[in-house]
Image (cartoon, rainbow, N blue to C red; front, side):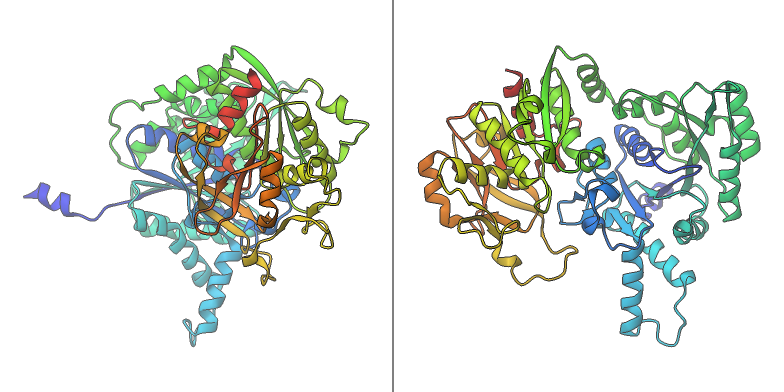
Length: 542
């Protein structure tokens, strides 16, 4: 009788909150993704969400130098790059609900106030803003019945921007009750070379700040360059009021893909399961992950790839592309030596020095005309010298412009994004974009179908005739020029079946020359590298 009652009880989702202290960029996203991977490998249904404290509604209007790349989900949300880590580690897609910003929280509350939902009430941070934050946190668990929802809180404890989130977590922990939530606090244990010591005081102060806001962390993850001695762990446990096995070391490693195994060694997943009163089950099945890591760390060959872009000073600007290349390299048992080249530095005089010896060239996405001519020169170099080429979004558009100028003889061919008055707009604004005036969230976003031409390089890579890929663009190939391109040797081999938009352009006579309007990098994961990147690296290696 009791077992029947237990089985009929509603599904209980457990919540894990990951906060950061001392300094930003300690790797909360990687720790969150690593823990999620270990729990997933034990058979649990896990997802991760990111709460970002900035007032932008989403990062779609942010400069890549400001915030790194903008990651796009299948349902068309422009999100933080950490969602890319979540997908690459877990191999499951994220959605709008996985990224929440302060701007979106306030926008929702203010909209409700204008509609009269709070009629007669004074709208305040507590309870209205914190209630909306709590609602967003619980939305994933209630909608999809996840066993565990890991919520990463952006920023650093003590920031003014983070206070409403910390308060919401405090309230939510009380509401959820015992064994249904826990807080993991990630801090830094710096090494002072002058005295030869690791210092725990910053961690103590960070925990004290959390305590001042009403939250006692359950687990501490300590980022460090050196091994933590038992004495240091004991000291941290004593002064921060946590158990000894809840002090977890996160030492620097050669690749982020080692972190799940490092966390497994530290028994982070076991500590979490115990504190949440969840069953351990068997050991996590990390065989496939270990196999990837072995290939990644022990390559049999090397391939030199140029990534041509305009934001290369900050590698996070192209995070998903870089990781997709590494995934494909491991799949092909080779190390990818990546040279990120600023497109503004590419001229007729410098191009040989910059691209000589490269076995593959990727021209990256971007917006605006800065550095565009350097990208077009890089395309020409790849086409004329028969070097494997992959153009992504603007990279594909640059390939179209270059071909129009140098093969079709349309010397002033361009995109109307760069030159509105061009006589040959081979790339033009999408019809659906012509009435759009607002910048945020108005591009062609999310996953769309694409039908592939049989026998094409893309078809051979995917091994199927219809695919779904994610987009983020306003401009497209101008179909008025399609016949001219086909006759001259550049083929449209991927077409959207609903809108007839050209999604993929290829040069069949070339060793491997593929330009795609979509962003394949968003769908590449550790255990399932994207087929286009796999083929690109394969041909570059040959």
